[in-house]
Length: 136
Image (cartoon, rainbow, N blue to C red; front, side, top):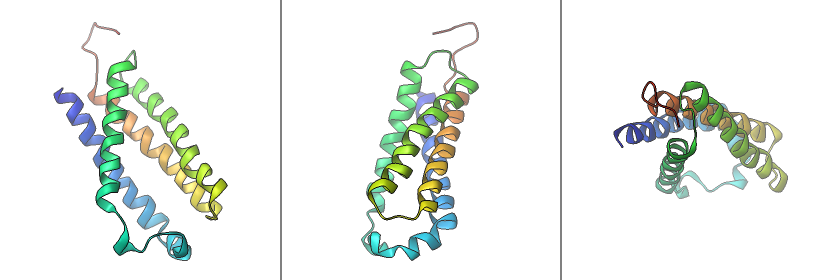
């Protein structure tokens, strides 16, 4: 239980930090150039956004801890990479297919999601480990 809470915290914090880098530093100018597509900053629902990230972090860690066999760093990274590709395709290119966002934004959303999820997989692989000598 304690390792699960620690893993959720590590995933949530790493996503928050990477979201800042991706959405503020890398894509800030692109968001400004497409301002007509987004709520003004004062109308953004940041609390809801952080709540969503926390729920996804909990589910991400739960699925790994409960259903992934052969837990460890390599397994965690592979899990994160696959989840990143799955979520990144939907986030980046799924949105690009229905909204007039620049291709650069879709690409950064895709790649950013892959990096975020792979790092999250690394965290769960490091934190949620099977004791030596046990296997699933």
